[in-house]
Length: 218
Image (cartoon, rainbow, N blue to C red; front, side):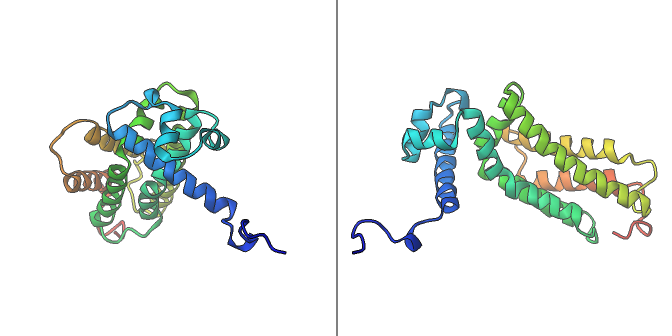
């Protein structure tokens, strides 16, 4: 006789779905708590679990410590943020600054959605070994993507021979990261659109500014 209380196997959520739902609840809880002005280091696990309406034991099953929690929350929060820029670097650059400006707009929009969490990530990466290793690795992967593209563009004559792909990729990544972080950490009076335009133009000029427009097919 089938059980009247236990859901049939086909009706149960897969483990991946349960984990994704749990992580989103915790992400919203952490961001709500950070939005109140409480530093991440001062937010107790019990408070996060209560805000997310999850059992503390369940929390620790997924996140053994707060460093692992922040890393996973950052992965969720930055997936779309990096994707926009990565798509631009992988695409044909046929629309001059407009394409990179749109990519910067998408990055800034993603940062705004998760600004409290990402500002906490930037702060903790300076002194938390695990968080710092994660963030440096994530930025390094983005730098490598840009380096490869710049090398290809230089070989094809689309950027000037003087452009150093590795150094330029590092400069661009640092410029974007620090510019966006600073714009959200303090009151600058700069709008998101103005910041996106300035970043887009700066990136375009650094990469293609010293190549005649007829030569770089963009």
